Image (cartoon, rainbow, N blue to C red):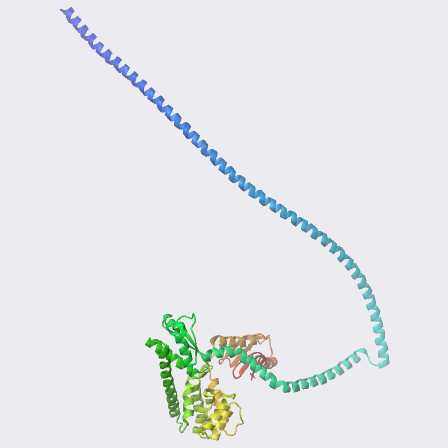
Length: 522
């Protein structure tokens, strides 16, 4: 029994061992099989990785070769360009070396020539020195002989000769000065006319622009086309009706009216203003508006003349004179309105006549009428003073009034005391600072020229142009110029201004140091 149990136990144990061994052997076989499979997969992965690495290696090698070829070509290009530059520079250097060599040869030749000349000059100088010594000896010998003959020393003879030459020079200078003065008197009229003509030529353009042009402003450039009209009909009709040249150019929002007659320019301006406001611009309408405006202007001129005579207390004037007085409103001289100038002159004449015990009404009347020749309808070849005198005579004015009108610019001889009063008051009204407008650029240039002219003299420290250019203050350095010299300096500056500049009236030059010396350039 025990044996059977042992036998069964042994069989059971052996069965268990068999199962265990079988499991172990199967596991070992599975592990071996798995290892074999993994080994095969690893070899395939290694093969694929090796193939891919070779492909990448070949691609990188190709890229490196291409980059190497590219860099090599760029380097070859740079090297070739540098070689070409070096070759050109070498060629230039060779040319310069050749030029320098040729110049050096020329310089050597010139140096040889100069050496020869120097030797010749030295020889000539030696000869000249010897001759000078001989001449000095002869001169001294001659002086001694002359001293023995004349009984005077050389210094005494020289002083005597100088004094005689001084007297002769003074006499000749006086004769020459008298001749020059006489010639100047003979040619004064001719030279004065030349100076006046040159002055007119210098300022004529600016004055013409100022006195002959009116600018008409418009809101937009579209109106320019309507003013011109189809084929220029409107503008031709307007020019024919007004007698004014109308300039339509590229100037934005502006039309230029050009004419010497200020009344015609005013008629054209007002007509354009009405036409632009109305909007109907055609030849028939233009003629209608121009005739209407002309009538209005004529009525306004007469009304202005009447109002002016009433304001000044002048009565009994001829209607033609009243119309000419009103016409002065549309005339200007150097920016000064002619009617305003006439009113100022009339009031000044009345005040001056009252102070002198004369008739102020006559003086006011003459002052108001003194420039009527500037606005006369006719244009004879006469100065405005003479023309105004003839108009006044024709209109029945008294002889003293007519003489004052004609003599205010010294065109006729003054017969009464009214004439100088009118002349002086006319000058006062025109010379008042600010009365007559100058172009700003021209005004500033004249003041600067005055100051710079005085600064050009030695010893002048500062200059100031004051009183609208009618006075020049010159400050000199006390250590650079003395009191005696400032009188000469003021006179020299005045003469230079008088000779080189154009200016209205007179310029007062005041030189200031410790003392002051005043001169006038008239």
